[in-house]
Figure 1 (spheres, helix red, strand yellow):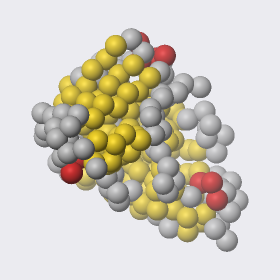
Figure 2 (cartoon, helix red, strand yellow):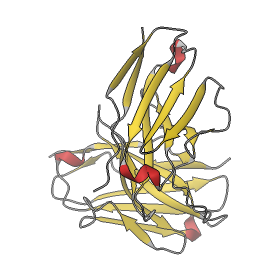
Figure 3 (cartoon, rainbow over the protein chains, first blue to last red):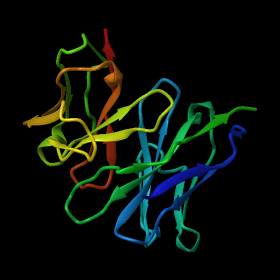
Figure 4 (tube, chains in turn purple, green):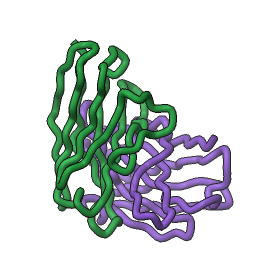
Length: 123
Length: 108
């Protein structure tokens, strides 16, 4: 059973860069064809897709965040990373790592999620 | 940008039927997926490909689709079904994922 675990600083200073890591266990990150995504959720609000990376390193981002986001994959460590620059209080949220199947069947969804990690942007 | 429209809340008595709609133009080209999220937990896939139940999901959960609208139906609602429910799909290119605002189901 694949498991995803997010980790990183719980507090980030405004204007700085938020950096998170998602560690995948229970299988190789390159096993099968998947996208690895980040999704966030401000307290009391809905889910927002941030972006995705394939195991080959190709990326796609939410247009509303594209100028500030970078997602990368480290296959040797079975990890996916998120960097979000120039953060403000509006970026305070629970950040989830999620796996999205990429089987060429035009089904775009998330089958496994991490538990999420709360990141607060504050000075 | 692509949007999915859901009602913010639905209230239902135990044993009754809850229906949650989700509308969006791209739903004629892309499948919809439904997630259940309870407080403090990650979302969990409930329905995929408009109508199919995910593994381990009770039969009281069902999905349907008509045109630009998909519907999640919970028949014989139980107290444990109280949660937020999100529909999710992708734009026509399949590159960008999108979520509805979420519907809070309250069991009276």
